[in-house]
Structure formats: C-alpha cells, structure tokens
Image 1 (spheres, helix red, strand yellow):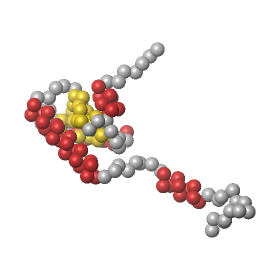
Image 2 (tube, rainbow, N blue to C red):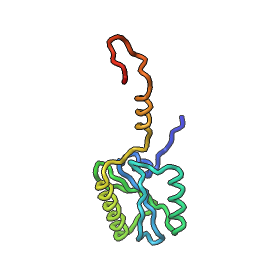
Image 3 (cartoon, rainbow, N blue to C red):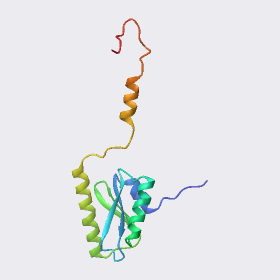
Image 4 (tube, rainbow, N blue to C red):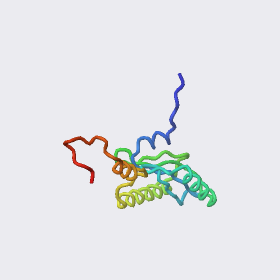
Length: 133
C-alpha cells in the first residue's frame, strides 16, 4: 500500500479557508502575500507570479492561513521576533482587505449554462401546461 504524505505546507493549506503563500526578500523584512485560498491562482497566473518575484530576488518562505480563526504558519526556516511581527502584520492587513472586499466570486460558467438551459424547448408540454411564450 502506497500513501501520499502531505507536508506541513499542504496540511495548513488544507485546514485553512483563507490561506496565502509568503515570499520574501533575502533579509526576510519585506513580505509579499499571494492568495491561495479561497480563490487559488491558475497555472498561468502561478507561473507569472513566480517569474515576477524571482526577478525581484524574492524567494518562497512558507504559508500562512487561518485555522479556526487563529493565524497559523508553516515556514521553511524560523523567523526572528521582528520578522515574525512584520509577517503577522502583513497577514492581518491582508485578512482585513480580504474581508472588506466581500465574498469571492467563483470562476465558473453557471450563468451561461442557465441561459442555455432556459433557451431549450420544453418537450414536456401536455394539455395542462402553458406554452413558453
């Protein structure tokens, strides 16, 4: 039997309804947060983001998310107190902006599907049913 092991990053992402990847400069004093949940990036968006931050000298340092309303993090390496405070401040600012933005709109084709459904002829017509006109 072969089992897939989830690392600490995958576990945090799975447990968090709101989660971000964290990239940082070499000194870990400037952080950028990249939304992972609830609206993950597409493959193309992920590639563009990775290229953008790599070009600026940023590197991946971990994941931060909310688990049962409490901020949790999984990091590649420990941060000192000032770095931890800067990361927490950045994440709380991200959370506030996220909550002020309102509900996330899912990217799907539900409206188009419903319009197509509505345009179909109703083949169930019988003597007791009204026409669609």
